[in-house]
Length: 467
Image 1 (tube, rainbow, N blue to C red):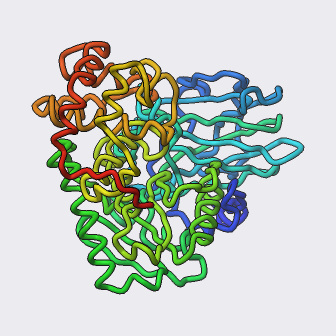
Image 2 (cartoon, rainbow, N blue to C red):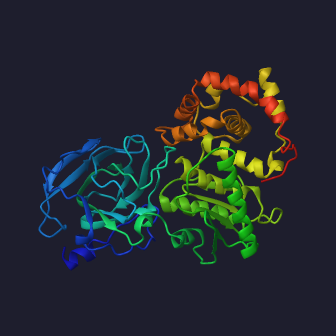
Image 3 (spheres, rainbow, N blue to C red):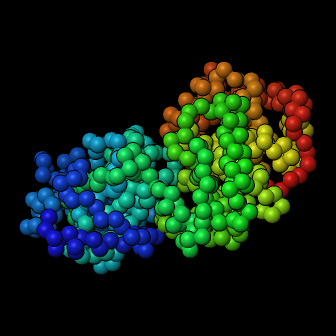
């Protein structure tokens, strides 16, 4: 590829990240080519819908391989948020040692074309996703750093250790996009190359440069809160370790964290809220403004300093536990009952007073009379999300599994790691099967177990302590 071609190939506007400074990619010879369209016919192996595919040639010297290319043509208007897609299997499955996905593109359209690329683990639906926007114009190089990909919103985590296919989704604007030379650029951090660095996280969290970092073996604290001197930070990190020990020793969630679970604590609530907005903008996803004291989204947890609680705020451990669960179980940290059940159960073990006037014995007694907040499992798992009014029931299910089915916990979490679908739909039956029963029988056993168990839990109180 000529020098002039390399220079003009840098123009790319990222959706939600136009200010991001891209590192200069490696030369073409260093790349691992996924598809250059020179073997067989350009359209071989592609599956698509909503688009038409056309085989075409490349102007002399316009792309590294030249020769042939593939054109995606979109003529319709978006339906359900997209126009169409095209996907292809890839022969390189482990992307962890790579820095970026790159390809060359030529765009013929009347306006910028909104797209996304999704790297899937077959058979799905787990995927890593990056949205981007292509300006109309001649051939240019598109560079998508892997560290800027995020979880898709299907509850399962897909890391770059196994990628089976790549999907290009066309979200908006009719026109055509011709692509060539889809490849991976090698990184410099071995198997950590595809993941965000601490500096990457600091840039999004503290763009003014006022943040500091503290870490232990398992957790990473990023903060600009004045209350976090080295001693306080060490105490909090040790408390997060206690939460991880409860997760392992009481609830049987085994495994090793692949990287330090990140927790970000801001000096003020306003800074926390502003960060959540920046995070969503950077990754091209809408994240609702936080209403709770903390939030775990994507692969990070965040909160703000509280003079009332100091370093030992229950929220900090709760949110950090979410990020640990994400790694250990492969379940995304936002809005599902498994995550909330475990994180709240761990919090309650470390901070019994944070059970905001929850009377577990009374809830089970009311259930036996057809009253109260507890609902049948069919209703509990009917919808996605995890409303706070159901937290007590989620906690009770985790306590039930840990107390009554201790020996089945390894099988339960193995089943969770193998889920393929939304947690509310597939996890309940998978857990029941791991125990060796069906969901209706498991519900009856849980209902009979509850009141007696919580009468024996002397650690729980009914006093309110705000998170």
